[in-house]
Length: 112
Length: 111
Image (cartoon, rainbow over all chains, first blue to last red; front, side):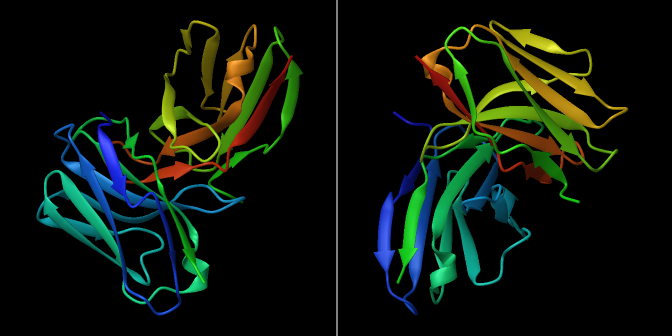
């Protein structure tokens, strides 16, 4: 079984809809991240969390919110989706003090 | 100037060839460096960390040049299975969230 899972894997939605992307990890890591990837751009950080009570904005947090429901779960919400949020979204986890990030399989989101 | 820059490629090489990629970074205070591999539409996976003294893992060798602010990845005896996009990742300060991803260099190994 994968250590970092994401649901859904693919989602098509319409402008203005609220969407939640979910991420779970079984690695016991404290740190979790949400990134988006667009063609021609590197992965960009949306939000990160170093533990359950710690939530921080990344470089492109506008239009997104997150919830760290438990150490293992970190959800990303788009309150009112817009077409330029069409992208591949990755969740990642990392051990505190470690450098390696472990990525989930990604969610391909299309906003029409 | 981008914080982390890579040649997007594609690099098209025959099987068995040796190929090298470079990645430059702008922040001289950067602490740690990595190469990740990403297959098409899949998640990035750590290929190797890059240490100051250089390091090797089988056919893969990574080097760091702090003076010139670049890291490199050398792949020897290329295999078809090496075809992927290679992402350069730089951590701006150890223990922080600040990982900057390059846009990746695409490698195609041809039979």
